[in-house]
View (cartoon, rainbow, N blue to C red):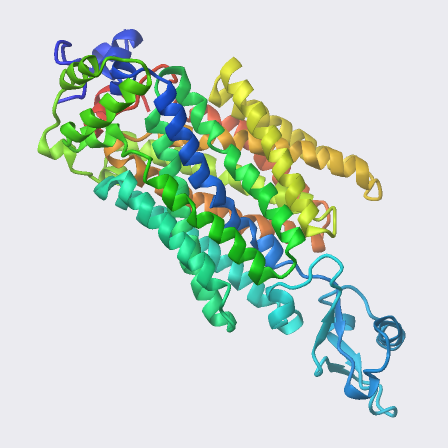
Length: 538
């Protein structure tokens, strides 16, 4: 049986094509009908979810700091230790024709201890680093340069793989055991592994602990966003989930400021994840999703939560209770999460494929723009702070466009602008850094405008009973985009303009592909797979 007021007749699919309003009635929203689409209860819960979501960018974006490679050169042997760094760099620059990091000049040095030998030898005495911006990180601690530089790429790849696994596993866990329980496990483990990883002295152990950290971090991210989607109703379900992205931008700014003042990377990371531990307190006040409780048949718990919500929103608890009781009870088959339906059900399979394709393109472009924009300055803290500020602008602009237009049109316009401004960089001389920086910043903002609405839009494509599972699979393609982007940018070392062409073209492609993604902002969220089958148009 569909989740709708009992007094309403069950509606057949062929009637839905003729009457959208009746279809909207069939998807009656328990939140809207009982406590209202948005009120004090939703505001309070949303604020707590935002605090919990504040650290969600630290694990992923801290790679830019932990893996930032400063200028380095061969460390002098003991007989040259009395020379200043300037004198030594001048000597090896003249003798070894030192160039940028990663070249033979930085990784090799003339055998200066044997004046008769003119051959180059590896930096057998180690490396020294320019610590103007970065006092320490995993590069300087474990010498991840030259023949060990590949370890940075392994670290990045492991992080993205772990994020993908975390989204996948926690998506299913949240649908099976509840949003609140899964979220609590994620934020507790996120704090533990975040703090413990800072004490690792062996990079193998550090990689493992960060792998675990990323796994739980992605779980907290996807569950928090889905809870925001299920928290509100009506016009607010297109606005509030977008505003949930604001803590991610503020998180970048906070991380850049803290790590700029605390230059020791271990202390800085520990301080960040001690802040993350405070989220455990916030979780105790966040209620379980009433929509999920109703879907799995725990009506009494849902009614209790909504009655308290009604008190905060100024609605008589008795009215709330009677309204909740008027909604139907699901059958045992409908309550059980049917994870295989994501692949076997025609409508869900199409939605999943379209959502993942759009997510892959949008996140590839966003991460590519982020990395390209980050190359404009050698100060990694400034880069991350600027990206956080621009992300705030992009999220607010996205919210305005969604209210004035709709989410699909907002993504379409932003993708087109991102592609145009990215391709425009091809016509700007490479020595005009300020102009290129401004245009690159606009392209980055446009990519953020796409990121903000696509996530809740995709989450709404799936019924409540398997919503986290569908969104968890979507998050895998978010991480794939993050893996692809550095490879695209690295092509610029061979052909400088090719990354801009690729990012620009796929951005313009996204402006067309987004058209095929279904959206009905006036329609309440589907609760079961049966509702998708009966009222789905895609």
